[in-house]
Image (cartoon, rainbow, N blue to C red; front, side, top):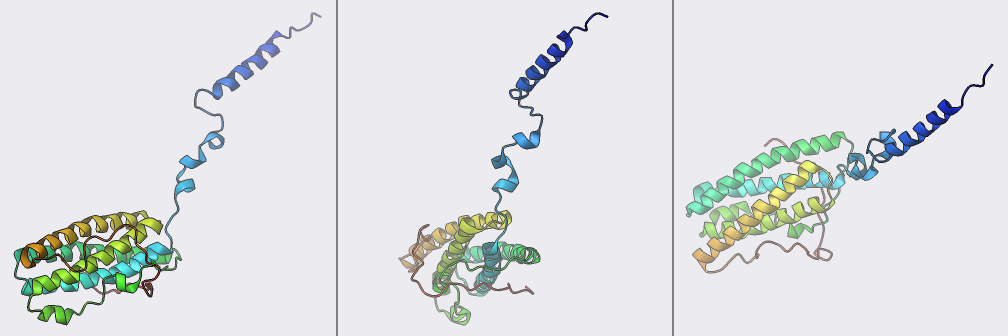
Length: 229
């Protein structure tokens, strides 16, 4: 019986080698999971929500509510239409953001996260204004600017902390919106104050991006946001 030629097996071996080499160059790996770039996968790059997000949602809500309360006074007391329009914008935008913050806080709470302080001294958050004193002010428009500028400065600091240390993309997007809009409003209020009263707000302008907050006093203590607005 004649011997069976060995050429077919040799051809099969060579074909396998050629196919293996081609598999490394055409971008189609035999094992996609093994050849995938780990850095390109969302799981490898996303940090996810954290306690800073919880702290931001818990603290920015009450901060916004104080701004809304201040802005409501302008409807009756403001003399300049520019202040009335600004106050209306603040009420509209910040009430919308309060609802988003409350939903975010509840969502993150359900994930078992605990609030972490943003690391901003209380006196640099721009809160605690005497609304009765503001309402009774003889020069309401000037007093309103002098109260709202530091309040906006505090919101910008809080938003920067969220951008730097938070992980929730929705809240970080809101934080950037707060920085952009309230920076513009600070600049506008200082222009008005200079035009109407000769000087900008004594609180200054948009806070610098780099500030030393280490020796400014007690830092914020996050808690649950107030509901029922």
